[in-house]
Amino acid sequence: MIAKLSGLLDSVGTDHCIVDCGGVGYLVYCSARTLRRVGDTGTAVSLRTEMQVREDAITLFGFIDAAERDWFRRLTTVQGVGSRVALALLSVLEPDKLGQAIAAQDRTALAQADGVGPKLANRLISELKDKVADLQFGAGPAATASGGAPAGAGVTGDAVSALVNLGYRRAEAFAAVAHAAQKAGPDAKVEQLIMMGLKELSA
Image (cartoon, rainbow, N blue to C red; front, side):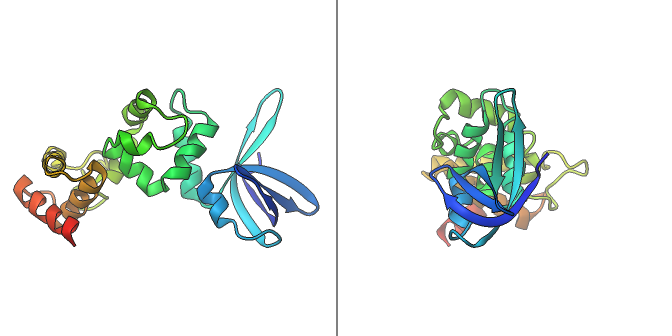
């Protein structure tokens, strides 16, 4: 198993790069995010990698950081999400934004990726929402002692819905309420979260 590659960047393509490690060039498929950050050809580069072995091919996928690699692994556990679709998702959404989109059930954000339609966006949310529950409103006072869904999640959900009804996009409403919930604590009322969320959005 190849878990990391360090060498010189030989070249960059539309969906891959070649890393020269001691005279051996490894072709590594990457997200657009990683390709934007690998640097210029001829410079040193280090990538976290995931290797897939099949009867007819050995394929390497590279990631600029561990967060992106971890999301790649998580995404490919979903039925219908292969490596290329996972890279497409990571190309349009940063790892933290991807977790936020799933937690916020933002199908529009997920559907920006090539190969992700409404049905697959729904499946991503359905299968991964519990896995990103700890990202919803942070591991602060609003989290349960068991580390599961935050206490008062119904209140925060109502606050998000209220902001969406006022015309804000679901993702930005979710982010504003998440920040407000961290400040206000587990006993916050929905009206308080709405007001604090509006202040976040107008800042």
